[in-house]
Image 1: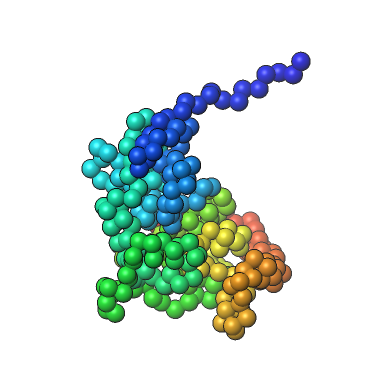
Image 2: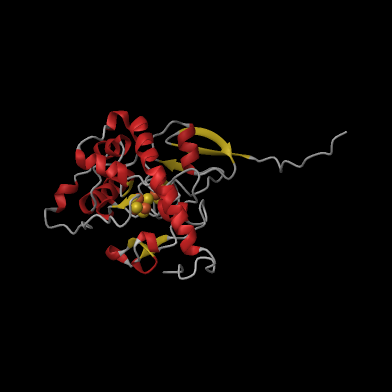
Amino acid sequence: MADAVFVGMPKRLVGVNIDGREIEVVEGSTILDACRRLTIDTPTLCQLDNLTPVNVCRVCVVEVEGSRVLVPACSRKVEAGMKIRTDSERVRHSRRLVLELLASSVDMSLCSAQVQGWMSQYGAQPERFGAEAATVAQPVKVDNDLYVRDYSRCILCYKCVEACGVDAQNTFAIGVAGRGFDAHISTEFDTPLPDSACVYCGNCIGVCPTGALMFKSEHDMRAEGTWDEGLRGGVHARAARAGQHDRESHLAAGQQRHRGAPLREGAVWV
Ligand code: SF4
Ligand code: FES
């Protein structure tokens, strides 16, 4: 007889009340998980199911009875008896303001239709801050044949940093540098991408929700007017394939460059 395999302790169910509806979810679930079970549309920008929550965008906030402040649904775990409100005036106001502040300072025009939908659903009017509102507008960084970095589109969601780091690639080629409004994604010492620890895995591009990180092939096709958003999947695959050949030669060059070097030498940064 085969040996018994321990598959973990059974998990309790936790009962919570969301917008007046009772639901039981497995302990350890987030409020966002519970909202999704009830098909309550909850905006998220920095959350991705396979990334560790970083709680930076705060667009997912909800009201929890007894809590002084709004809490991020994407990371706050459910507790038995929690009473949660996802559509109060306070929640709507906060989500609207987050979207407005982001869209007034960042070019979010390439965000998904879902994000654009949240903008209109919450009545976000980023233009109300006026034409003089500070922005992160800056020239596009094109320093290699594969990836383009357009940080005027960056909402600092940290997804690329996490995908480059412990959540996926463990390369740590990029992170957040600076503080406050000057906070920005950067390679170590702002070195050009080909000289950084980047191995061109493409994970950062895959997770970027705003088009701040993009295959150069897609960037060029958009510039030429040959990018077809309606055929995004197919065209994206072609663009990715077009980049694949270049990627392989870059990787070979990169591996040569790093061969024999101590692991990620010089790639530790703040
Ligand atoms: S570059 Fe993209 S993935 Fe990275 S922080 Fe900015 S918006 Fe997020
Ligand atoms: S999605 Fe919850 S804080 Fe960003």
